[in-house]
Length: 174
Picture 1 (tube, helix red, strand yellow):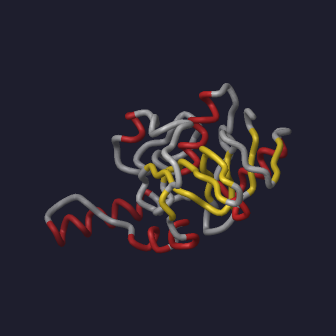
Picture 2: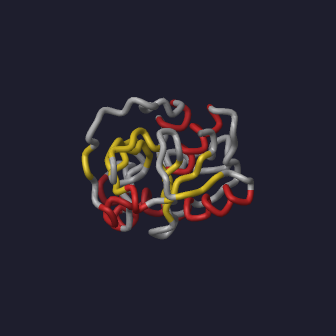
């Protein structure tokens, strides 16, 4: 899921500074339209075993959407996190854009896209303004434990459960 443009964030930060005397701004409209607002957030049924938050500090430890990563995506977004993990396995989602386009782009690059979640596959949905992608950690019948960034619209890492039927699955390396 993508956040407001830099100009909008700069304006919000300036307004927050003027009102509060600090440089912290919160984009509450983005959080209201987050995937968590759409699907809810269910705590993970198991501890993440596949990955953990290994997102590089150069993208994790700076404000969300403040830098563009190696795959031409804004930092601390679901697409940046997924592209980083895909690249770790020698595959690429470079320039795949918003999450809602990932299934089509993956098919165009001959990757398998289906309704069968497997550990390591990318859970993808077109729902919401920008869609969402997450990495499947484990499958428990009709529930999938995923690891992602920006599920709640705040740019943070989260491990949680989702309904397996709510997503498509892209198999970049499995």
